Length: 238
Ligand code: URA
Image (cartoon, rainbow, N blue to C red):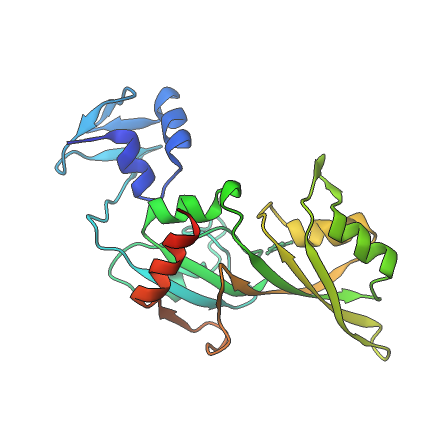
């Protein structure tokens, strides 16, 4: 028997704290009855959140690294019926994305059914490194580069110091490629950071996440992580 909030967080549906909130809000049912914080459940009990059945992974964990193409939503289900990142993975277990990439962002995305690791990788306290390559309109002045590096205000929040480097500038198209290394993962963070200094991001790709990259994968391709890679991820969130 395990506490219901633990099962919810292990399933990857929500963090432990969020699971507790959902229970308090009466949105979690055990066999059709409203759950109470601390309720214990067995493997036969059916847990639902907002009428969606929580699937348990029983220790059968899968970890996939996807080279996310443009035009795919980073979610498990889309209200508008658009293709999701999960649709690209052929797996006998239900995996979900670790964090989020925008519809038009491409590159490195991890998917798993290991809720515990997923919650830790996306928790800001673990400072997981994400490296992005942004194609911007115009070029990055030294002044704007320093502003971005020191931290800018987006959504009433100051971003943490980060690395920003202009890799190239194309005079013909008046665009530049800029590499940005951050340890946060706020919604549309990179685009908003550039927007705060008046720069538009034309294309965005994530080169790496937690040290993993998709250099050997074509757009839309994926592979399973090795045991060693999974161990490294665990060591990053200890
Ligand atoms: N920052 C963004 O603006 N978009 C992404 O998809 C990821 C990071």
